[in-house]
Figure 1: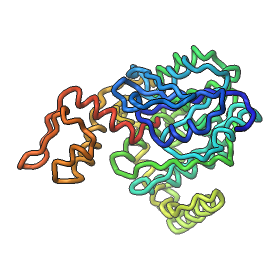
Figure 2 (figure 1 turned 60 degrees about the horizontal axis):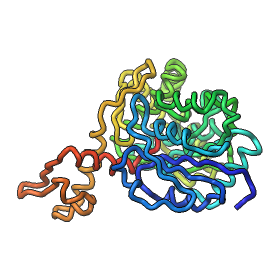
Figure 3 (figure 1 turned 90 degrees about the vertical axis):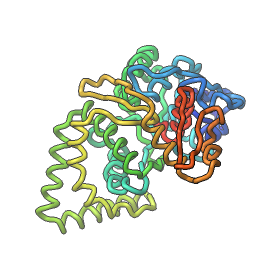
Figure 4 (figure 1 turned 45 degrees about the vertical axis):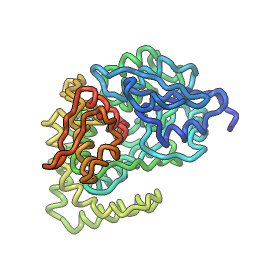
Length: 372
């Protein structure tokens, strides 16, 4: 391990996974890894934590996103002066933590640069919300400048413009921990050598809610007008000069993908994605509810966060996994305890779900996308 000051690493997740293993393996002797879940029912609470790792229970969020609530609690328990926030939805090499901390020591608050990539419906939006976001963050352009990506950011207590207690209070009122942290740091240095591929689901349901959440966060915090004007202007140009715009966008994004070594061909969808962006933005203006990481939220223009329920995404995951087989072994593939009340009938799948079962299902399904 490199000779550096100790850090408190905060990792919100509900299960012990590859990200936990990777981060635990990178800890220096004085570091601490705080794995933060929601409730005692979360699977991670049953894992025996290795040396240097503490598993914390933050409690259910009220008036904020689940991850923001977890980070708020983790900040109150962290011992060290330097913090690292990270997510559980991407892999990292053995020097990831050392490189991020080194960037923080050299430049002040520093962030890795995410590239959100995936298949399915996400292909249409990857050039814009994946590659373009990555470029703007790397070069500190536009509204993306000074973004502190919660998947990989390092900062110290003294670098915050507010106290840690004030930050934790604010975290318990927000949807986006990234946006809040960026507002509470004087500047954030993007580590261009740490472009991080984050694989996202390409299913229609998942992409729809991801877009609603992301665009509403941007619109509510930065305003809607600029995004609507720019996207609509691009569509008008694309319809008036389709060939020129299509070739320009495809060629431009192809160069970006090649320059950053992204190894993808989804730049081919840049023109089609541009055409559907305005309707998506208008939809996000009108629709203030979305599902994220096992919960359903309402996020109105006031910026107040309301948690509606925690069942819809759980049901989608149950339906997907329960349909894998037509035998009673489906129960065991899901890992549902026999006491949960899930059974088959001659007429097909038949669910008898008790309240404790829904708690278990919600905990089980959050692992597919806890990162907020």
